[in-house]
Amino acid sequence: MSRIGKLPVDIPAGVTITVGDKDITVAGPKGTLTVPVQQNTTTKVEENKIVVTRKDDEPKSKAWHGLQRALLQNAVEGVTKGFEKKLEINGVGFRLSGGGKQIEMALGFSHPVKYTAPEGVELKTDKMEITVSGIDKQKVGQVAAEIRALKKPEPYKGKGIKYVDEYIVRKAGKAGKK
Image 1 (cartoon, rainbow, N blue to C red):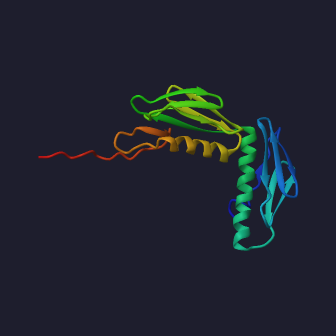
Image 2: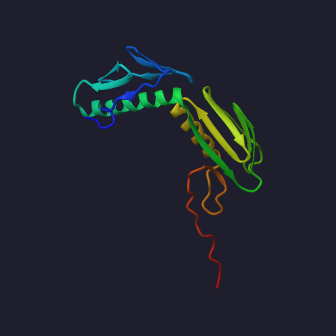
Image 3: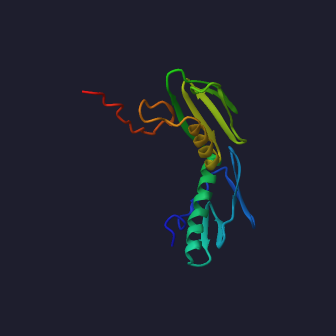
């Protein structure tokens, strides 16, 4: 039995779940998400819990069992609390402006870099910090990774875009002659 898959997902007050043939719809105070139904799994809503079971003990079925439960947990958490990732920009001459759907950054290139967020993701700026928020965990993580990839932090001075809780391993510069 999958250690993650066998755990039931609690349904908080204000969240409704509709199980269909091909997808499961999770609606809550922050919005609506759909989760695809994985192969060889069945999903049932019992009282205020979602229970995911699998049809057989094949290795693929075991993997899909845990995946289905994790996707449902993330959808329930997303429509109730939402997700957010924070990035910070370090570097002399680097600037940040904008917010909402589009931000503009000066990252040491010959031109300013503009980034437009996809539907369902919001960007907030505060000094040299970007907050990516939304209800879909995958989209929030993808947008944060795309913004970070615009100027990855370098190991000598630490300049670039990094996650707030990320630690950059620093390297020593040139040793010099004796």
